Length: 461
Image 1 (cartoon, helix red, strand yellow):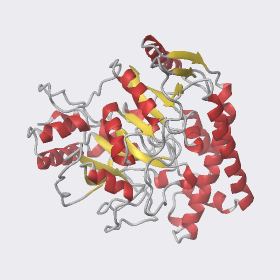
Image 2 (cartoon, helix red, strand yellow):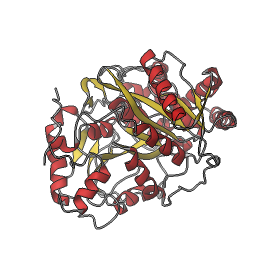
Image 3 (cartoon, helix red, strand yellow):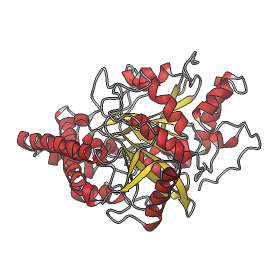
Image 4 (cartoon, rainbow, N blue to C red):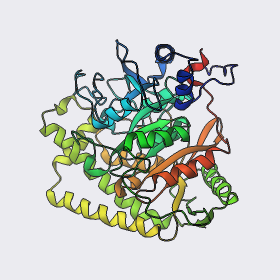
């Protein structure tokens, strides 16, 4: 079990990446001491299973950027980072060093981060819990009996446990937002195309996947945004300008598939808080999203299945896959070109249907998780039933995959607590509306309905 350490006495102890960067810039900590603290915290939290690999040598000292000297953990799935061997949580892949940086990795380094390890993922990201057969099993720092989410579960657990203040993450069906929601963090899934994907362009799953980070604060996400996109606004202008009176119309969705009562209450409380500061709230019936949800689920199934089938064709040994992964790969191999073309057309239709909703509102406010984070073992992968896995994922995060399929940006952050666990809310915007989501998230965060129970580095100076 992981004991929650006491908060340090020093009031200026950094609690997020920008706070740590300030301490480093002011000489209160050295870069080497910060990295040493991160390594010590990783060792102290080894039973959490958040970290699956650590570099023996320290990365080079950072010379600039807003996050200069901040230690970074990298998800074991996504665009490669030189010197961080990845195996996507699978026995079918061996860890191999020497891979060159992706364009995104280069952006992280230019921002001042010092990557020194990799975080746990389910095999090929195929679960909303991070429990790969090759290990380690990733636990939730807020309650080790519970899942930390997936597929960026290791990244979220590492940030929530205070190993690092921010970690690289990816999202193809909720994989940034679900772990962030489970662990009381901020998770932004950017607009499709906002984050660089070169030079390989191999992790985008037909456009449904993107990369960013899980963070301990909105301000970290806001500062990271221009670092990774290369511009303060990203590559797209916000398609709907902020009205002259400075308010948005928020489409409120509180109901839906089996949303626990306390989660609906948190959504309503967030809507009320936004209304108090001047935003307009309109109720959106969950049925308006149902067709988009169901279409998105079908497309997610086809894209993921086809992708896993291509891994087999590329030479990976399916007998080394977990049973569920192997079943998805077989499902993908049976798909026809017509099946994939129909999925592409359906995706365009879902994107248009969501865009039409934004004619009546500027942002959607929805539940993120239907219940508290599930117990470990709730997403087993030792079976060959893809439909069962997909149903479990949809039940836990019913409004997650639609943002991936439509390309829309989506943001989750905690807004309150229940039984010591965060109550996450989700904001979904139109394509290019990432910054409006972060601005609204900052307004909600200012209410301080949630504070991190575990300080950065466990509070060790």
